[in-house]
Length: 130
Image 1 (cartoon, rainbow, N blue to C red):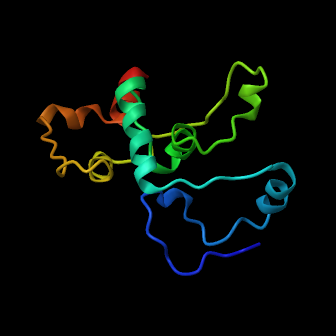
Image 2 (cartoon, rainbow, N blue to C red; image 1 turned 90 degrees about the vertical axis):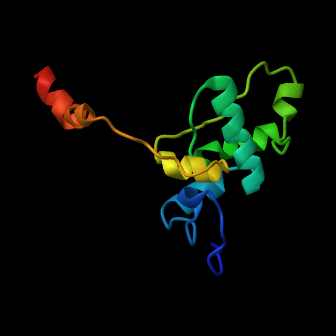
């Protein structure tokens, strides 16, 4: 088990564990056949593709699989041997609008909420349904 030295900078903050987990590392070591790394620029490009073509917002750490696929870093031997599909897990939701804008290089997002928006928080909305 190797540990990361220092505090490397990355937009993928959800993946910045100092060391692999004590419980998960043995399983990963036994079951994983390899790994690839992607740059922040490749992650941004994947986030843009997901937004523009799939209309989904991915958090940076959740876009790494798509970034690896789009950058050509995934070994596609299975596809070349007749397989017809590949699955890439992509996730989002753990991302504020301000962070998304910053990661994508946009000006800081400014939202102006109308007074009635406060009445429609998740809790207030759920209470109205009951």
